[in-house]
Length: 171
Image (cartoon, rainbow, N blue to C red):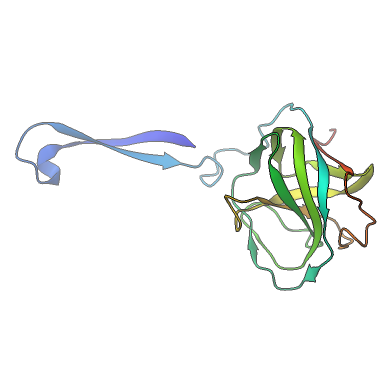
């Protein structure tokens, strides 16, 4: 978050009888404010992990609200959920309804995950990071992955212990 001082207001303007000044502050999310015109992440290390749960379920009306920021920091030992959608327009600030549950993974090498990153599990390309939903925070983050083929973790043949790798796409 970027903190910006909006105004210095004379105390009289807010009902004080002295001449002291009051500072009013506001925070601005640079993503919501449209300050970035392109992805600012020029280079970053991969995020790595191990699958600790394989899921098998699909929903048509999930209504996941993807947050506006395009990135989330993932720390070592955190556990997060991976959810697949075939809604190819899915992205930060959008709502996702059609989903397939992939699984949960434990982060073994932390880093910053960004919408547009490529995700592989067990050496297979799973899709592209669409965004993040905080429904279950602080327990875990829902990481939404988009792929035109909406298959669950079981349908994809995922196995416990499969390596999860998330990388910046090559340009």
